[in-house]
Length: 415
Image 1 (cartoon, rainbow, N blue to C red):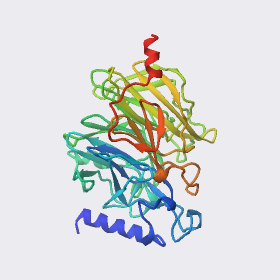
Image 2 (cartoon, helix red, strand yellow):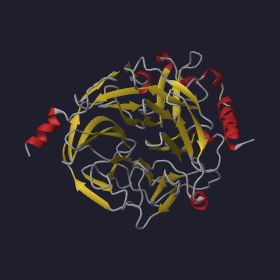
Image 3 (cartoon, helix red, strand yellow):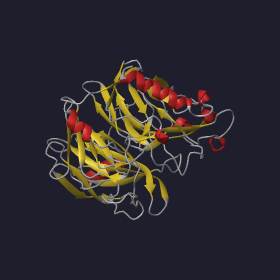
Image 4 (cartoon, rainbow, N blue to C red):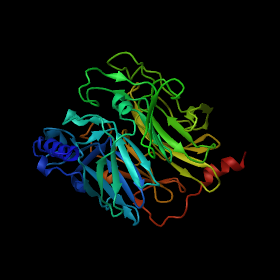
Protein backbone atom coordinates (compact mmCIF):
# COMPACT_ATOMS: atom_id res chain seq x y z
CA UNK A 1 0.00 0.00 0.00
CA UNK A 2 1.36 3.46 -0.91
CA UNK A 3 1.68 6.22 1.67
CA UNK A 4 -1.15 8.19 -0.04
CA UNK A 5 -3.53 5.24 0.02
CA UNK A 6 -2.63 4.41 3.63
CA UNK A 7 -3.28 8.03 4.62
CA UNK A 8 -6.65 7.92 2.87
CA UNK A 9 -7.52 4.72 4.72
CA UNK A 10 -6.51 6.35 8.00
CA UNK A 11 -8.73 9.34 7.24
CA UNK A 12 -11.70 7.10 6.57
CA UNK A 13 -11.04 5.10 9.72
CA UNK A 14 -10.79 8.30 11.73
CA UNK A 15 -14.15 9.48 10.39
CA UNK A 16 -15.80 6.14 11.03
CA UNK A 17 -14.63 6.05 14.65
CA UNK A 18 -17.04 8.83 15.59
CA UNK A 19 -20.57 7.81 16.55
CA UNK A 20 -23.03 8.88 13.87
CA UNK A 21 -20.15 10.03 11.68
CA UNK A 22 -21.87 8.82 8.51
CA UNK A 23 -24.35 11.68 8.96
CA UNK A 24 -21.72 14.36 9.49
CA UNK A 25 -20.81 16.64 6.60
CA UNK A 26 -18.13 19.27 6.05
CA UNK A 27 -20.75 21.56 4.48
CA UNK A 28 -23.90 21.29 6.62
CA UNK A 29 -27.16 23.03 5.78
CA UNK A 30 -27.56 26.56 7.12
CA UNK A 31 -29.95 25.41 9.84
CA UNK A 32 -27.52 22.70 10.98
CA UNK A 33 -24.30 24.73 11.02
CA UNK A 34 -22.86 25.82 14.38
CA UNK A 35 -19.13 26.64 14.29
CA UNK A 36 -15.95 26.15 12.27
CA UNK A 37 -12.46 26.90 13.61
CA UNK A 38 -8.76 26.28 13.07
CA UNK A 39 -9.26 26.22 9.28
CA UNK A 40 -6.54 27.60 6.99
CA UNK A 41 -7.55 29.60 3.91
CA UNK A 42 -5.88 30.63 0.65
CA UNK A 43 -6.77 31.81 -2.86
CA UNK A 44 -5.52 30.42 -6.18
CA UNK A 45 -7.03 31.65 -9.41
CA UNK A 46 -10.81 31.88 -9.24
CA UNK A 47 -11.23 29.82 -6.08
CA UNK A 48 -10.76 30.25 -2.36
CA UNK A 49 -9.74 27.03 -0.57
CA UNK A 50 -10.50 26.05 3.03
CA UNK A 51 -8.51 23.24 4.62
CA UNK A 52 -8.30 21.59 8.01
CA UNK A 53 -9.89 22.52 11.29
CA UNK A 54 -12.96 21.42 13.21
CA UNK A 55 -16.70 21.79 12.75
CA UNK A 56 -19.74 21.57 15.02
CA UNK A 57 -23.23 20.93 13.66
CA UNK A 58 -26.65 19.40 14.28
CA UNK A 59 -26.70 15.62 13.80
CA UNK A 60 -29.94 13.59 13.90
CA UNK A 61 -31.68 16.66 15.25
CA UNK A 62 -29.28 16.87 18.18
CA UNK A 63 -27.24 20.03 18.87
CA UNK A 64 -23.47 19.64 19.44
CA UNK A 65 -23.87 19.61 23.22
CA UNK A 66 -25.86 16.35 23.01
CA UNK A 67 -23.40 14.49 20.80
CA UNK A 68 -20.47 12.19 21.57
CA UNK A 69 -18.06 14.85 20.30
CA UNK A 70 -18.98 18.53 20.39
CA UNK A 71 -16.81 19.20 17.32
CA UNK A 72 -15.51 16.88 14.63
CA UNK A 73 -12.59 17.04 12.24
CA UNK A 74 -13.11 18.46 8.77
CA UNK A 75 -12.00 15.72 6.38
CA UNK A 76 -12.49 17.58 3.10
CA UNK A 77 -10.80 20.51 1.45
CA UNK A 78 -13.46 23.05 0.44
CA UNK A 79 -13.46 25.36 -2.57
CA UNK A 80 -15.70 28.38 -3.23
CA UNK A 81 -15.98 29.92 -6.70
CA UNK A 82 -14.86 33.57 -6.84
CA UNK A 83 -15.70 34.13 -10.51
CA UNK A 84 -19.38 34.62 -9.62
CA UNK A 85 -21.09 36.73 -6.98
CA UNK A 86 -22.73 35.04 -3.99
CA UNK A 87 -24.02 35.74 -0.52
CA UNK A 88 -22.72 34.16 2.66
CA UNK A 89 -25.97 32.18 2.83
CA UNK A 90 -25.93 31.03 -0.79
CA UNK A 91 -22.20 30.32 -1.26
CA UNK A 92 -21.73 26.80 -2.64
CA UNK A 93 -19.09 24.82 -0.74
CA UNK A 94 -17.51 22.20 -3.00
CA UNK A 95 -15.98 19.25 -1.10
CA UNK A 96 -12.65 17.75 -2.25
CA UNK A 97 -11.43 14.44 -0.74
CA UNK A 98 -8.54 14.84 1.68
CA UNK A 99 -6.12 11.89 1.99
CA UNK A 100 -5.32 12.17 5.70
CA UNK A 101 -7.16 13.06 8.93
CA UNK A 102 -7.79 16.73 9.44
CA UNK A 103 -5.49 18.93 11.52
CA UNK A 104 -6.13 22.32 13.13
CA UNK A 105 -3.91 25.39 13.01
CA UNK A 106 -1.83 24.28 10.02
CA UNK A 107 0.57 26.54 8.18
CA UNK A 108 -0.41 27.09 4.55
CA UNK A 109 2.05 28.44 1.97
CA UNK A 110 0.85 29.43 -1.49
CA UNK A 111 2.96 29.39 -4.67
CA UNK A 112 0.95 31.56 -7.09
CA UNK A 113 3.27 31.07 -10.07
CA UNK A 114 3.00 27.27 -9.83
CA UNK A 115 -0.67 27.44 -8.89
CA UNK A 116 -0.33 25.17 -5.81
CA UNK A 117 -0.35 25.45 -2.03
CA UNK A 118 1.30 23.47 0.76
CA UNK A 119 0.07 22.44 4.22
CA UNK A 120 2.40 21.60 7.10
CA UNK A 121 2.25 21.21 10.85
CA UNK A 122 -0.82 21.74 12.98
CA UNK A 123 -2.57 19.72 15.67
CA UNK A 124 -3.96 16.24 15.05
CA UNK A 125 -7.54 16.55 16.27
CA UNK A 126 -8.03 14.13 19.20
CA UNK A 127 -4.75 12.49 18.12
CA UNK A 128 -6.55 10.37 15.52
CA UNK A 129 -4.30 8.34 13.17
CA UNK A 130 -1.18 10.45 13.64
CA UNK A 131 1.63 9.84 11.15
CA UNK A 132 5.23 10.93 10.63
CA UNK A 133 6.35 14.38 9.50
CA UNK A 134 5.18 15.16 5.95
CA UNK A 135 4.61 18.21 3.76
CA UNK A 136 1.46 17.95 1.64
CA UNK A 137 0.88 19.78 -1.66
CA UNK A 138 -2.50 20.59 -3.19
CA UNK A 139 -2.72 21.02 -6.96
CA UNK A 140 -6.03 22.59 -8.11
CA UNK A 141 -7.69 21.52 -11.36
CA UNK A 142 -9.00 25.08 -11.97
CA UNK A 143 -12.58 23.78 -11.81
CA UNK A 144 -13.01 23.81 -8.04
CA UNK A 145 -11.38 20.41 -7.50
CA UNK A 146 -7.83 19.16 -7.24
CA UNK A 147 -5.61 16.55 -5.66
CA UNK A 148 -3.28 16.19 -2.67
CA UNK A 149 0.13 14.53 -2.76
CA UNK A 150 3.11 14.32 -0.44
CA UNK A 151 5.94 16.70 -1.39
CA UNK A 152 9.40 15.18 -0.72
CA UNK A 153 12.07 17.56 0.64
CA UNK A 154 15.30 18.33 -1.21
CA UNK A 155 17.20 17.96 2.09
CA UNK A 156 15.45 15.05 3.86
CA UNK A 157 17.85 14.80 6.81
CA UNK A 158 17.16 18.36 7.93
CA UNK A 159 13.42 17.92 7.30
CA UNK A 160 13.30 14.86 9.54
CA UNK A 161 14.81 16.91 12.37
CA UNK A 162 12.05 19.55 12.25
CA UNK A 163 9.32 19.60 14.88
CA UNK A 164 5.75 19.87 13.66
CA UNK A 165 3.90 22.47 15.69
CA UNK A 166 0.88 24.72 16.04
CA UNK A 167 0.45 28.36 17.12
CA UNK A 168 3.31 29.56 14.92
CA UNK A 169 2.90 32.63 12.68
CA UNK A 170 3.10 31.78 8.97
CA UNK A 171 3.35 33.76 5.74
CA UNK A 172 4.98 33.36 2.35
CA UNK A 173 6.67 35.42 -0.33
CA UNK A 174 6.52 34.45 -4.01
CA UNK A 175 9.03 31.65 -3.42
CA UNK A 176 9.51 31.01 0.33
CA UNK A 177 7.19 30.01 3.15
CA UNK A 178 8.00 31.02 6.74
CA UNK A 179 6.79 29.58 10.05
CA UNK A 180 7.86 31.60 13.08
CA UNK A 181 7.90 29.98 16.52
CA UNK A 182 5.14 27.61 17.52
CA UNK A 183 4.47 24.90 20.08
CA UNK A 184 5.20 21.18 19.65
CA UNK A 185 3.26 18.69 21.75
CA UNK A 186 1.87 15.18 21.82
CA UNK A 187 -1.00 16.54 19.69
CA UNK A 188 1.25 17.89 16.94
CA UNK A 189 4.03 15.33 16.67
CA UNK A 190 3.91 11.57 16.44
CA UNK A 191 5.37 9.86 19.54
CA UNK A 192 6.30 13.16 21.27
CA UNK A 193 6.28 12.87 25.05
CA UNK A 194 6.67 16.50 26.19
CA UNK A 195 5.34 19.89 25.19
CA UNK A 196 8.05 22.20 23.84
CA UNK A 197 8.02 25.88 22.89
CA UNK A 198 10.00 26.19 19.67
CA UNK A 199 12.41 29.10 19.25
CA UNK A 200 13.43 30.48 15.90
CA UNK A 201 11.92 30.10 12.46
CA UNK A 202 11.53 27.49 9.73
CA UNK A 203 11.61 28.37 6.02
CA UNK A 204 10.69 26.31 2.95
CA UNK A 205 11.80 27.33 -0.54
CA UNK A 206 8.90 26.37 -2.79
CA UNK A 207 11.07 26.41 -5.92
CA UNK A 208 14.05 24.34 -4.77
CA UNK A 209 12.06 22.33 -2.15
CA UNK A 210 14.82 23.08 0.36
CA UNK A 211 14.13 23.57 4.08
CA UNK A 212 16.02 25.84 6.45
CA UNK A 213 15.89 25.85 10.24
CA UNK A 214 17.71 28.15 12.59
CA UNK A 215 17.62 30.64 15.43
CA UNK A 216 20.61 32.96 15.82
CA UNK A 217 21.10 35.09 12.73
CA UNK A 218 18.08 33.56 11.02
CA UNK A 219 14.93 34.21 13.02
CA UNK A 220 13.83 37.71 14.06
CA UNK A 221 12.21 36.28 17.21
CA UNK A 222 13.26 34.16 20.16
CA UNK A 223 9.85 32.56 20.69
CA UNK A 224 6.48 33.55 19.24
CA UNK A 225 3.12 31.89 19.81
CA UNK A 226 -0.43 32.70 18.73
CA UNK A 227 0.59 35.53 16.38
CA UNK A 228 -0.47 36.23 12.79
CA UNK A 229 1.99 37.10 10.01
CA UNK A 230 1.46 38.77 6.64
CA UNK A 231 3.74 39.45 3.67
CA UNK A 232 3.66 42.99 2.27
CA UNK A 233 5.14 42.72 -1.24
CA UNK A 234 5.54 46.42 -2.10
CA UNK A 235 7.39 47.74 0.95
CA UNK A 236 11.19 47.68 0.77
CA UNK A 237 13.36 46.05 -1.92
CA UNK A 238 12.28 42.50 -0.95
CA UNK A 239 8.93 43.17 0.68
CA UNK A 240 8.36 42.79 4.42
CA UNK A 241 6.92 40.05 6.62
CA UNK A 242 4.92 41.76 9.36
CA UNK A 243 3.90 40.08 12.62
CA UNK A 244 0.77 40.93 14.61
CA UNK A 245 0.12 40.05 18.23
CA UNK A 246 1.22 36.85 19.92
CA UNK A 247 3.08 36.18 23.16
CA UNK A 248 6.62 35.17 24.07
CA UNK A 249 6.41 31.87 25.91
CA UNK A 250 9.53 30.63 27.76
CA UNK A 251 11.35 27.75 26.06
CA UNK A 252 11.54 25.68 29.24
CA UNK A 253 8.49 24.18 30.90
CA UNK A 254 5.99 21.61 29.71
CA UNK A 255 2.91 23.69 30.57
CA UNK A 256 3.12 27.09 28.85
CA UNK A 257 1.57 29.93 30.82
CA UNK A 258 -0.41 31.89 28.21
CA UNK A 259 -1.97 34.22 30.79
CA UNK A 260 1.25 35.76 32.13
CA UNK A 261 3.51 35.47 29.06
CA UNK A 262 4.88 38.80 27.76
CA UNK A 263 2.75 40.01 24.85
CA UNK A 264 3.78 41.68 21.60
CA UNK A 265 1.67 44.79 21.43
CA UNK A 266 0.25 46.35 18.28
CA UNK A 267 1.63 49.83 18.85
CA UNK A 268 5.25 48.84 18.25
CA UNK A 269 5.19 46.45 15.30
CA UNK A 270 7.98 44.04 14.42
CA UNK A 271 8.73 42.97 10.86
CA UNK A 272 11.61 41.59 8.82
CA UNK A 273 13.09 41.49 5.35
CA UNK A 274 12.46 37.95 4.02
CA UNK A 275 15.64 37.98 1.91
CA UNK A 276 18.10 39.19 4.58
CA UNK A 277 16.09 38.26 7.73
CA UNK A 278 17.01 41.68 9.10
CA UNK A 279 14.56 42.75 11.81
CA UNK A 280 12.90 46.16 12.07
CA UNK A 281 10.27 47.76 14.25
CA UNK A 282 8.05 50.80 13.96
CA UNK A 283 5.80 52.65 16.39
CA UNK A 284 2.28 53.12 15.05
CA UNK A 285 -0.27 55.87 15.62
CA UNK A 286 -4.05 56.16 15.47
CA UNK A 287 -6.54 53.80 17.10
CA UNK A 288 -4.14 51.07 18.17
CA UNK A 289 -5.80 47.68 18.84
CA UNK A 290 -5.56 46.50 22.47
CA UNK A 291 -3.39 43.56 23.47
CA UNK A 292 -2.61 40.83 24.48
CA UNK A 293 -4.10 39.34 21.32
CA UNK A 294 -3.65 35.86 19.90
CA UNK A 295 -5.68 33.87 17.34
CA UNK A 296 -6.46 37.02 15.38
CA UNK A 297 -6.71 37.05 11.58
CA UNK A 298 -5.31 39.46 9.02
CA UNK A 299 -5.49 40.09 5.26
CA UNK A 300 -3.83 42.71 3.07
CA UNK A 301 -4.49 44.86 0.00
CA UNK A 302 -2.15 46.83 -2.26
CA UNK A 303 -3.67 50.21 -3.13
CA UNK A 304 -3.38 52.32 -6.26
CA UNK A 305 -1.31 54.98 -4.48
CA UNK A 306 1.59 52.58 -3.95
CA UNK A 307 0.77 51.86 -0.33
CA UNK A 308 -0.75 48.91 1.44
CA UNK A 309 -3.58 48.31 3.93
CA UNK A 310 -3.90 45.39 6.36
CA UNK A 311 -7.16 44.51 8.09
CA UNK A 312 -7.04 42.85 11.52
CA UNK A 313 -10.11 41.48 13.26
CA UNK A 314 -11.02 39.42 16.31
CA UNK A 315 -8.75 37.38 18.53
CA UNK A 316 -8.35 36.19 22.09
CA UNK A 317 -6.92 37.80 25.22
CA UNK A 318 -6.23 34.90 27.59
CA UNK A 319 -4.86 37.14 30.33
CA UNK A 320 -8.09 39.11 30.76
CA UNK A 321 -10.43 36.36 29.47
CA UNK A 322 -11.62 38.47 26.52
CA UNK A 323 -12.64 37.40 23.03
CA UNK A 324 -12.53 40.39 20.68
CA UNK A 325 -15.09 41.50 18.10
CA UNK A 326 -13.23 44.67 17.06
CA UNK A 327 -11.74 45.43 13.63
CA UNK A 328 -8.90 47.73 12.54
CA UNK A 329 -7.06 48.74 9.37
CA UNK A 330 -3.32 49.43 9.40
CA UNK A 331 -2.26 51.74 6.56
CA UNK A 332 1.28 51.69 5.17
CA UNK A 333 3.62 53.47 4.80
CA UNK A 334 2.02 55.76 7.40
CA UNK A 335 1.80 53.02 10.06
CA UNK A 336 -1.52 54.44 11.20
CA UNK A 337 -4.36 52.36 12.65
CA UNK A 338 -8.02 53.15 11.91
CA UNK A 339 -10.81 51.48 13.84
CA UNK A 340 -13.79 50.41 11.73
CA UNK A 341 -17.10 48.72 12.54
CA UNK A 342 -17.00 45.72 14.85
CA UNK A 343 -17.78 42.29 13.45
CA UNK A 344 -21.54 42.02 12.88
CA UNK A 345 -21.40 38.37 13.98
CA UNK A 346 -19.87 39.16 17.36
CA UNK A 347 -16.79 37.94 19.17
CA UNK A 348 -14.59 35.35 17.45
CA UNK A 349 -11.14 33.82 17.62
CA UNK A 350 -9.37 31.18 15.54
CA UNK A 351 -10.85 32.53 12.30
CA UNK A 352 -8.84 32.83 9.07
CA UNK A 353 -8.89 35.82 6.73
CA UNK A 354 -7.91 36.24 3.09
CA UNK A 355 -8.28 38.86 0.35
CA UNK A 356 -10.87 37.80 -2.25
CA UNK A 357 -11.81 39.48 -5.50
CA UNK A 358 -10.53 42.99 -5.92
CA UNK A 359 -11.29 44.62 -2.59
CA UNK A 360 -13.02 42.33 -0.10
CA UNK A 361 -11.76 40.40 2.89
CA UNK A 362 -13.28 36.99 3.58
CA UNK A 363 -13.27 35.74 7.16
CA UNK A 364 -13.82 32.00 7.57
CA UNK A 365 -15.00 30.35 10.78
CA UNK A 366 -14.09 31.34 14.29
CA UNK A 367 -15.25 30.29 17.72
CA UNK A 368 -16.42 32.34 20.68
CA UNK A 369 -15.97 30.42 23.92
CA UNK A 370 -16.87 26.92 22.77
CA UNK A 371 -18.37 24.93 19.90
CA UNK A 372 -21.95 24.96 21.19
CA UNK A 373 -22.57 28.68 20.63
CA UNK A 374 -24.26 28.98 17.21
CA UNK A 375 -22.41 31.30 14.81
CA UNK A 376 -24.54 34.25 13.61
CA UNK A 377 -22.46 34.29 10.40
CA UNK A 378 -24.08 32.04 7.76
CA UNK A 379 -21.74 29.09 7.08
CA UNK A 380 -19.16 30.91 9.20
CA UNK A 381 -18.51 33.38 6.36
CA UNK A 382 -18.06 37.15 6.78
CA UNK A 383 -17.11 39.76 4.17
CA UNK A 384 -15.60 43.23 4.55
CA UNK A 385 -15.38 45.82 1.74
CA UNK A 386 -12.05 47.62 2.16
CA UNK A 387 -12.94 50.65 0.02
CA UNK A 388 -16.32 51.28 1.65
CA UNK A 389 -15.03 50.06 5.05
CA UNK A 390 -18.25 48.11 5.60
CA UNK A 391 -19.16 44.56 6.55
CA UNK A 392 -21.34 42.91 3.91
CA UNK A 393 -23.09 39.61 3.34
CA UNK A 394 -22.43 39.54 -0.42
CA UNK A 395 -19.26 38.74 -2.35
CA UNK A 396 -19.09 41.00 -5.42
CA UNK A 397 -17.20 39.38 -8.29
CA UNK A 398 -17.58 42.58 -10.33
CA UNK A 399 -16.38 45.08 -7.71
CA UNK A 400 -14.19 47.96 -8.81
CA UNK A 401 -10.47 47.97 -8.07
CA UNK A 402 -9.46 48.61 -4.47
CA UNK A 403 -8.86 52.23 -3.53
CA UNK A 404 -8.09 53.64 -0.12
CA UNK A 405 -11.16 54.78 1.75
CA UNK A 406 -11.72 58.52 2.04
CA UNK A 407 -11.04 58.41 5.78
CA UNK A 408 -7.59 56.86 5.34
CA UNK A 409 -6.78 58.99 2.29
CA UNK A 410 -7.59 62.13 4.27
CA UNK A 411 -4.92 61.23 6.84
CA UNK A 412 -2.23 61.27 4.12
CA UNK A 413 -3.54 64.49 2.58
CA UNK A 414 -3.31 66.17 5.96
CA UNK A 415 0.34 65.20 6.27
